[in-house]
Length: 594
View 1 (cartoon, rainbow, N blue to C red):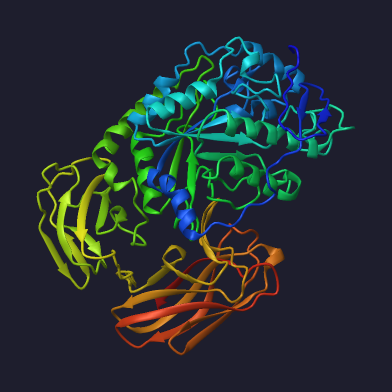
View 2 (cartoon, rainbow, N blue to C red; view 1 turned 180 degrees about the horizontal axis):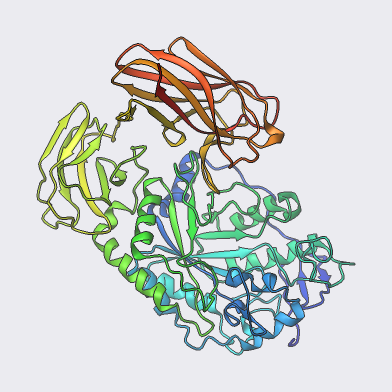
């Protein structure tokens, strides 16, 4: 390593000096408060306003891991590119020479910012430091940064200036996890990194947090206004050990308008589902789905499994329709270029957004639970219908109660009115025979008042059966919620026995029906008793183990009678919950009996 850097981060007396098996750091007493006054809802709404308006951001994973690009010592390393040090079990001493190989001479900050802007992106989040501890900015408290590379340019300074010139918000990703810093623990035998055999004697995690705070202070002091601090890698320690409340208070004292994600082991401003879109959004929380374009975050030369433009655009629409933001990743090469496959997809998305951005930016979640042909977003007085499957006849908008003053295609600059018919079942819009856009065409409805929808009931199939799926359930209570992914499609997290679920069922032909329920429950949590009820009829059941929370089994409950045509409410409630959760409830099926 080169000669060590020193910095005085505090001005109070009694400076603490710490020696590291690497860079030397010096910091002083932190003048920031350990907590800040609570903000009002109006203050929070004002602080979050730009982020909620934006809806579309660019994630950039870039660092030393772009140099090996998925290979180490001639072998292809499985897993995502930025985790190559972990997946190839590379000790820090063997990883460090990559710093002298990092020379991204093709890096052009203005070009990156223009690519993002042309795609319709509103904010950029980049890895100032990933888990390998290497910093893409000029840090005065470590030599393990970009200034120790042949490139010797502060990438964060160039990119932040370029993004602001293009009207984009600059945001920082910062890893709490650090595989190189000698004070970051755990490591060695019994830890997630047994291959890192550096001694732990004398290591002090509290001292590491001081180092992290020093770098965060640099990032929020030297680069102008920052929109978001996007933490990651906090899972190995609880919030108390991270001194999370203290860290957050420091950040907010430096930049009071800063937005902070939930990965510092405190809820903060927004949730961060990764590589998946919550089926029903996240009730009561701001949220942002981060997602790759292929299978890796950091550049990996052999990963050519690119998502199509159609998938990426429909993801953006789907997320906006559920009230979330889309943080779409690019992984630049070691030379400093965004891969051409990413550039092509972003350009195609930009063309769609240029025409239809009004239906994305500043919108809120759809009033519809599900739509058979696509998604919807809304603004005061407007509904935007994103049609994926263009109808052969009129476009049916089920359950809309508001008066429609006008309907038109967003792609039609003249806003020519489309014929509209309204009745008690909703709205019919007569649309052209061909879709304006094969991926997603937007029909705008100018409506009177806040969009109001009558939820559609689950109707009988041709054979007279009713399938009451978890996604269609109305969930009542504080814990239970719809859950998907990992083989799940159910009402899960049902840890309060007072919670319950209901369905609205539309029956055309009554009679006797047999009832079965499909659920999953691991052995340790089995034993709950529950009741399914319709009218004054009750069917009792007991939750038996199915082997795992994603291993579902259908159980017969019994029979009941629905007197005739009409709307019925089907309810499932827990009677007892002796262990951790009631069950993962997938569906109730009601079939005509004898």
